[in-house]
Amino acid sequence: MKILALITARGGSKRLPGKNIRKLGGKPLIVWSIDVAKDIPEICDILVSTDDPYIAQVSKEAGANVPWLRPTELATDIASSVDVAIHALDWYEMHHGTIDGLLLLQPTSPFRTKESVRKGIDAFIKSNKETVLGVSNTDSHPHWTFKIEGEHLVKFTNELVLDLESKESQAVYKINGLLYLISPEALRSSRSFFKGNALPLIIDSAKESLDIDTELDFNMAKIMLTE
Image: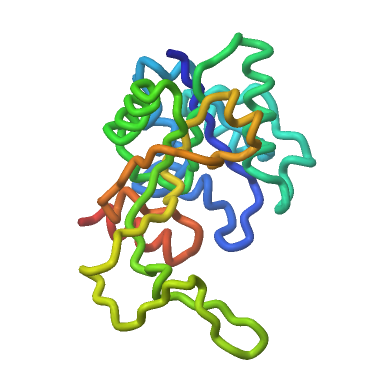
């Protein structure tokens, strides 16, 4: 089993400038994701896709493979993560041969554990390469949510039950960005990390599920490190 770990890290970030190389616990944020992918036998390489020379330098020093800077058209606000992943996948397989799985690790999830990555890979292998996604429980049950049409609140689903107690409702989950593991064939054919069935890698830890996207998230991460 050959799995390529891909870490995508664009230089521009409007909500949290320079987030991928901000120091957390004494090391740049992206290095947390590079380190967690090391010494896992099935991971054949750790590839970083970035448009930023400094992120590239930091990643290389941490032991990642950064063979190029991402093309300009894939470094915009509207460039999709799927296009970025397929670009990296195509390059890697052209130069290093075919792989069995692509493991996308977002640098904004610094507290994912090696154990969770290992569990995701084991599920991928046992299921014969079915897509695996990291998920965590969400407090906002769709039965209690609304959308706005015109000036009025409208039920988001047809099953809105305002007096339903939490313990009586079915658990719902959100993708937490911690881990996406998919076969090259599935990614290229669907051009999505989630089309049809996928296996959940359920993460119960709020710390491990943290996805840093704002200053508040980053401050929360610093607090979590001290606990």
